[in-house]
Image (tube, rainbow, N blue to C red):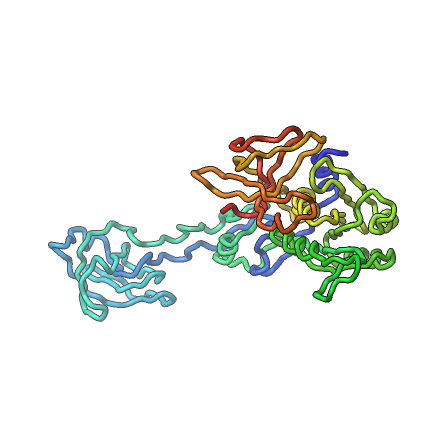
Length: 406
């Protein structure tokens, strides 16, 4: 057996980030910026009002108070999206809406709640003094023109897309999310709801792996089930390598010579077959076919899930140009005794993590066998349990985060 770290490094050494491409802003979420973005314009591009009220000269209302209001003549109204054309002179005010440009001559805005006078009144009474700049969003107060708004390597989230849109960058240059094709193999697998025949089981790995990869920021696609036929397996792998950035296969990666995935990959790709010192997911294969990485995952459902989480994610995120190659690891507290026997492997227990009194408590699910997917369905972490005798309830453990804790 080899350590998990060795298998991970073998994968990373053979996965290189994809080339940068411009993409539509709507498609950039979850992508990595290939270079810095410099703001070509200021945000906001002109001074505008932070609220509904009246644009005034601060000096005119310096002595205003509820008991001694200052009356100003209303000379115009400015709505958001309109130009401010009337200059505010001494003793004057302009009724203004949130986001509307501040008219020339005005240097402050009094919120409407601190005034008296109807919306169509010729004059307004100001009940509070305001200093210059109050309730005014200055030019460039969010982003100054010429500044770097997002650095190279930024993983673009929703707010980043808003920033790009605000400075007019509609086709950012990014390292795109990799496209992962997922293939299952086996004559025993049934993809529909027809009655099962002797020796048949319903295929569950592929839909799980496609959804899991998508949750990790990968554009995963379902490439279907392939029967136990060497020519069909080779054709599926070659076709997948031609249309995807990576391939994940499920099943056929054990050390037996009759596993046809192994037979085919040994013939057409550069592959390393590994026994990784973890439980579950000990058997794992990684290879390269015509420059396309191939992840050979075990056939047992939980093993397949763990293998993709611990060894697939780093390679796929390297393809995506991400700096956070691994799933987050956080400190948690064991919610129950986690006993085990020494066997030379690190165990990854499926567990449900929830916040309790300021601590993240990870409680293992019932049924930890590698085929028991139903019991693992609610798990949102993998508790990392080093080789040894286990830990007691209340002890601190490391948890690999699969989903948000409750």
